[in-house]
Image (cartoon, rainbow, N blue to C red; front, top):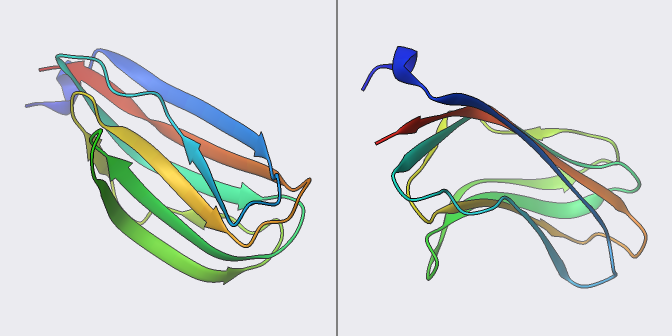
Length: 117
């Protein structure tokens, strides 16, 4: 595969307001059949308050595969991915935030590209 053969750029933002639950998950839509999605930059942020933990991961419809984790994150601090993240058919990318409070404004920004398999 050659990066020059990519079909389109991929940019998505996901926002959610914290509801006071122990764990809040921000997620992208699943990858379409016959498509490879590569996320080159991911940033997760709680713009309102500090929180305890954030995890980045992939789910294939049945199992969570955790990729990275950071603890004790300040309000308005970006958690960023350290490497490219490859997603295949049916996979969806997610960020789990633990320790948020009700009314927190949560943001996940993902940038990358897609190509046909």
